[in-house]
Image 1 (cartoon, rainbow, N blue to C red):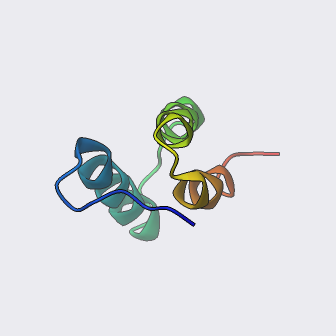
Image 2: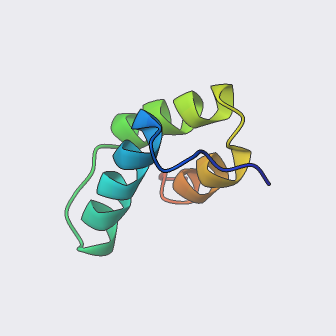
Length: 57
């Protein structure tokens, strides 16, 4: 269950996106998808899966 270190740019991006989602602010599904893919490429599958749960089915 690897996660990225606090200083990694994707960590800041993930935190910002999750704050938007938690606040009920609309986030375009492509934005979620692109970040999830970037997280997967960095080995942060757990975070990617967490974001993917917010994609429309």
